[in-house]
Length: 148
Length: 82
Image 1: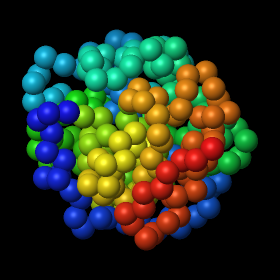
Image 2: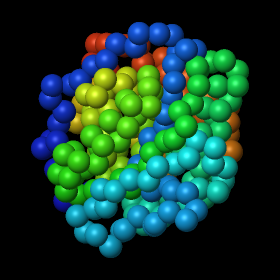
Image 3: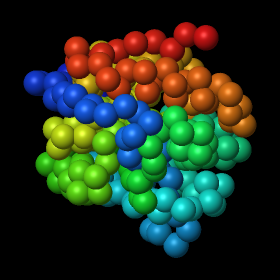
Image 4: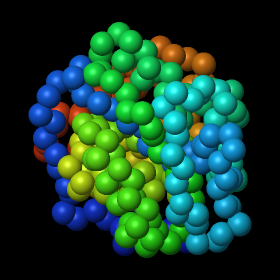
């Protein structure tokens, strides 16, 4: 992980939102940095040494197993995600929670980034706030995020 | 890297007024970055929900993470324990 300077990006102040309804009434969305995307969407660009800070919108009705992983990092074991996308993007598990009434409902879309972003300036200033604004406009109450 | 990117996207979403919780595979990164709510899962990179094709374990990890969502004593960083 040479090259990363985590402390530069410490979140301060830490934002906090109070959930104003029980989980079984909340609309949820998923966000992952596993570099997953739908068929037909462009691959993530691992050749960009600063990091690819773009994101992909994952349709809510996608078959989880159809998701493609184009995260080229050699720093993690890709075999688990290859066998089961839910290990990094648990859409089927959240569908089960929705079916069982444990959460209110799933949003009609989710979002995916590729995590290897050495210089996250544009992520912080542009792409992350864009995704955040879309989730708010969608009426999402809570977001579950996963790395890989 | 992934765990840092999660923290930064998470903070942007919470700032927008939407509650968030994340999985972290690197406790040190979460403790330095300070996302609002994180569940540290002591598994290798590539295994944030524990194991492939183990829906019961995946559900236990999700439930542990969702139990943090109502916390407002941020930053919250807990560890998943079986």
